[in-house]
Amino acid sequence: MISKVKKITILSLFPKMVEDALSHSIIKRATDANLVNIEVVNFRDFSNNKHHNVDDVAYGGGPGMVLTCQPIVDAIRKFKTENSLVIILNPSGEPYIQAKAIELANNEKDLILICGHYEGFDERIFEYVDLEISLGDFVLTGGEIAALAITDSLVRLIPGVIKKASFEEESFMNGLLDHPSYTKPRDFEGHLVPETLFSGNHKKIAEWRHEAAYEKTLKKRPDLILKKTKGGN
Image 1 (cartoon, one colour):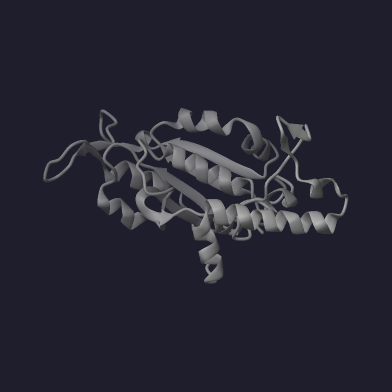
Image 2 (image 1 turned 30 degrees about the vertical axis):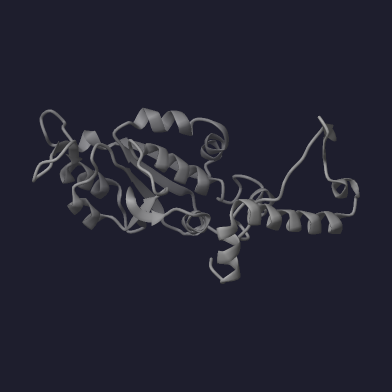
């Protein structure tokens, strides 16, 4: 587990969009408790162009504009230290899964997340980053939503942010989806809560939950069962 305050720097053209989302719920409480330090930076401020442009037309032609190297690279150099991991959010990146969230939350490095926009990055920018991450095989308008998803997923894993038991049994933590959960009323329009949950027998309840989690995963995400059977992470 990390032994210092985790620092996350998000480089974005739309900092207010990111800041607004970070000012609520668990992330805000973690920030207020000094368990994480999140800074949002407009990399347009680093442009040396008199009009503060950060994009230009693509060599060879084509639609849209391409983010230029200078503002982003200068922003990286401003905030990067020997203890930083620079991550660029890009469709061609490594698919983001729970195991990566755990890895990023538990290491000692500070994170710099770079949000793209327009038609993407000048390819040479990738020479200045350590890791590419993608949320999945789809394209977003910009990297801000991806940066928020990654930040949320790892901040909640930092010790002290939420109760350890709250995430140890969650989906993907043991290769399965989370078990079904129920609350009042016991009977809702004929849909009943399983009787085992009223037994008071904690061993039987735990066994039922594990079996129900397996059945739920087999029905909804059989790929996870196959991966678990093959010994994947």
